Amino acid sequence: MGSASPPINVAIIGGGIGGLALAAGLSKKPHLTVHVYEGVPEYKDVGAGLALHKNAIGAMSLLGPEVRKAYFDKAINIGEDEDDEMATEVILAHGPHTGQLVAELGRAKGRKSVSRADLLAGFLDLIPKQNISFGKKLALIEETDPSTPNPKVHLTFQDGTKVQSDCVLGADGIHSMVRSHLLGSDHPATLPKNHDNWQVFRTLVSTSEAITTHGINPRWAKTVPIMTGPQGHINVIPLNKGTRLSAGVAVRGLSTPSSSSSPNPTLDPTLYSTYHPQALSLVQMIASPSTPSTTWSIGDHDHAPFYHKSRIAILGDAAHASLPFAGNGAAQALEDAAVLDHLFSRVKSPSQIKAALAAYDAVRRKRSQEVVELSRRFGRVYAHCSDGEIYGDGEERSDTPLVEDPERLREFFAKAAAFTNNFDLKKQNDEAMEVYEGLVRGRSRSCGQGPGN
Image 1: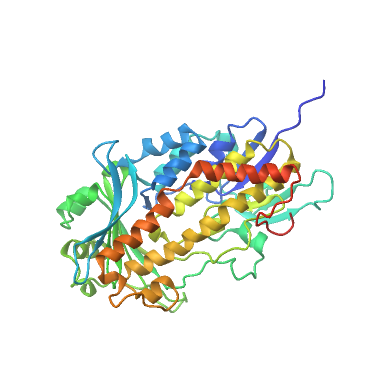
Image 2: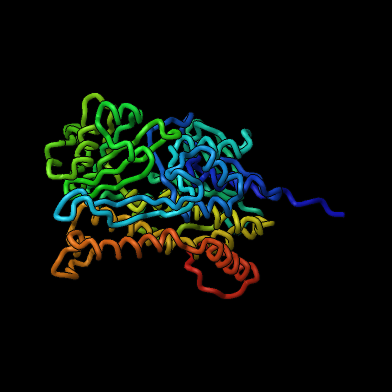
């Protein structure tokens, strides 16, 4: 009797949400050995909050019930009951229709909010400790000639560590080195862009302080509002089982190219005097000297022409970083992980890796890049831009601008929310597997593959 084939070695670069969720799924497969290399020495609670949409919850379920449970164990109910269907509320905070609700996004039963740090901790508990290394910042990727027997991908880290793997999956974020390796450092889509010059101001405070000291409506401790207006839109996310609130303002056109002589932009509450009083109180809290606030510019990726090359692929923000305004960045990373996990359940030989990554590229690139575009559009809607700016074509679609027409706004958001929230994730997995099996059988198929396949 012949000896069993050695397990396929998979290296995941980056231990964020997508990387850890994927590792949690792949680690259960006995024909794989999986190792995560995370650049930071340890995770830190930076106050980022998530209110995951229905498609994110569905993707976690496909990865395994324990992945979904890790999320629910760490999160706080937005509603009073697990059976309640809750959503992110988009509210006009400025203009003739101030106070009107124009969208309910991400509707799902038992929907919860969670801090990024808490979610990472939950996912990390699902991965054997020996399968993740911290403080491993990638410095160099080298590939063995693919024509040689059993080619490998060689990784060198900044601390001098060298490893080799059969497959590398880059989940190393918006400034991904794996993306740079695939596309080339001079490719126009390699580095993130901030086309609309967005600047975010955010604070993290205890819920009790927000309510008693700053007069914040207690309702915002149990829901996720987005309050829109031309000076910036405000959002709130309850974190850490409702004990803290993450509140932020995103301002379009404020960010400037960084330089040593340029001061950080500041948030001026007087510019929000015409906003709804509840929105104004949030801006004043974020700008208050008594609250620990931070500010940074944000960006996204222009579209990569491919997500994989040979035995290397990118996922999550490394593949399709998006602005946060559609609330679907983490969800898209989880969809990536669900598809890759499903495909690698059938990869029993290193020779099949390229087919699996080509199938992943085939089904995930178009949808994830459409979400990048949608997120840009959401931000422009929130900033009360003209129709032409929102749709990017300069064309006005009505005598009344979209942001001054609540019914048209509701139609816009309903259609967009259905695209992200109600997507058939099982069908996506099945389509990826169909492409994979066709490639493995050598059937001719056009599947949007990148070069070097």
